[in-house]
Amino acid sequence: MRKLFADLCFALALTLSVTGLFGYVAEASSPWHGSGTIAGGGGADKLSTALATGPCTSHGCFIDLSTQSGVTAGQIQNVFPSVSPGGATGSTAVTDTWSSCAEDTANSIMYCHGGGHTDYAGNEVYKNDLKNSLNWVREFGPSTADTGNTGYYVDSTNCTGAGCPASVHTYGALVYVPSYGLFRAFGAIYISGNEGPQSWLYLAGHWTQEANTPSGGSPYYESSFYNPTDGNVYFTGQFNGTKVWTPSTNAWVYNNNSSPPTANYYGSAMDVAHQRLWMIGNGYAGYMSLTGTLTNVTTTGNQTCQNFGGSPGVVYRTVDSKIWCIIPGSTTAYNLNTTTFAWTAVTANGSNAVTPSSLPGGNEGGMFNRAQYDSAHDAIIIVVSTQTDMVAYIP
Image (cartoon, rainbow, N blue to C red; front, side, top):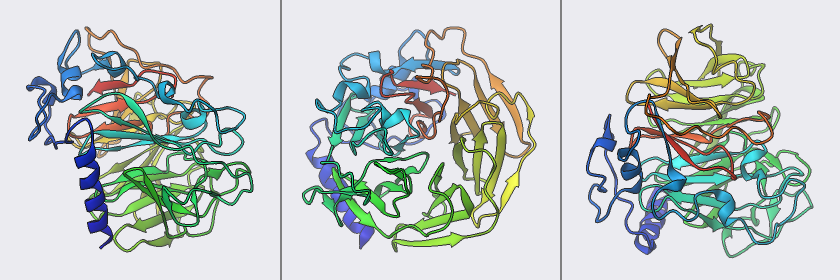
């Protein structure tokens, strides 16, 4: 019933979309060499078009998506609230203070959501339809902030629960769950920085409160992993083992086993082939099993990615079953063989003319999940900050 309701809401959102249907594009190894037409749809696929037009259109190319034809809101800051809802850092904290993005990969829709602690009170959801628009929109919020540290904001119209979710550092704990929506759990709430036990599901402009997260451990530096094999969402963080949410039953399980990694800032990716939850960055590489057993990994090759002094952009690419890594400010990408644990550096294509932006203010916090693998286009989508252009990388 929960899945059916989500499917109906999603279908309604598609019908009402002013930009047309979000037609599905089947995964292919080099889809940018195609026609740029949405499969089953009636118009050009803007992401495919961007990947297929020069000067660099092959492996090792970075493409600036914010400068494509028709894009007028290519940066999240273009659609900030006209009046800030509060916080010492302001709206840029949506990404810049330990927060993340997540992509609906079947439909190529990117969502970004964050803030929290003393940095930002806003609980907006920013959305970019990569197929039909490439423009950012502020689809939700901000709600009226509450400084009472309850984890809730007052808004009975757009949320189901005790209120609307308060702003939080989302770290890497923002994840898109197919057929359900955008899922958020844990995080450091506005304004205290304490953990809010609530979990939330977002779909078509509406938040629904889900079951509370299991207690135990620190609320900081979580990573999230959607597992298409069993349909569950796995979390690691500064707590032992894994905390697991099952969408179909809205139930949590806490596998309180191995201690967490010593590194605080790391990128994360679900190794689907081996069913491993990888954590990479700040001098660390390792993975958790689904049941919460940690394995520290000794890698070989070029270890620049795992030695990045913060959270690098880490994704799992289904085409080659490798972990791919993007470092802000660099045109060299890296991939990790998940069987041999060997790193390989991939230099930029000779025709490449685009460099992903560096992190504003240095590497504190890093990227968390603001690099996402778009399986429909076999491309890595990179959102460094609210203040920078969105970039695609062709691995």
